[in-house]
Length: 278
Ligand code: KIV
Image (tube, rainbow, N blue to C red; front, top):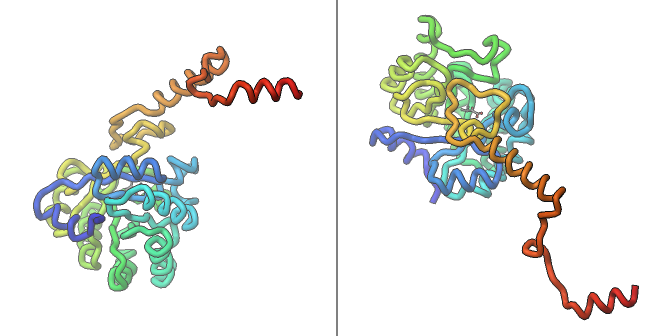
């Protein structure tokens, strides 16, 4: 049985912390799921850490649905959330509904995530009314990087802090089942977390959120183009992979790979016959 949004909400009531990770492919999703993560986000960070774009803005619905399908095939237990890409939910409620439905129907996800507070409330309400669970996302919202002037922490000044608190309450009232708080001061996330009945999931938002999310490629030390302050590397796989590939190159060049251990055999008389005939 897959984890449900009811179980996620209950974790907050039971004061049980909620670990969440991103995943973008079958193999990683399978490992993350088997390790016991209850929430997997097919984040639009896909664009940067897998597809090599400079930001999340070029990511399309086709790319997201394609990768969501792979994650769903790999993870059998976790609740899977599809991240709605840039401009796939802002233009109209019907656009938001149509694109969210693709994540659920074609992708096999159980929920979607949208960036923004009050500005997306109407869409959140409609999706929830139509049976699609929605996770909110406020603070540093990377899809608005041009408007925000880059990837900077949010909510340090009074006006912005008040707006974030208000946005969080509006998302809860609109029916979101949880809300991501990205790069906001730890004291502000504590306040928001206490104010909301739904779980807050932090990334660069301090220890008092109900859960934490990390980009899997950051926490495994796979994506090294840029390491954000809020990312903790639990492994350094980029280095290990490069060392493994160097080992392979030198063994191929020195003829120490492959040996007969990695080769196939055939009947000796057959090969003798072939040699005689050729
Ligand atoms: O796309 C993503 O990976 C995200 C997380 C950073 C929350 O939105």
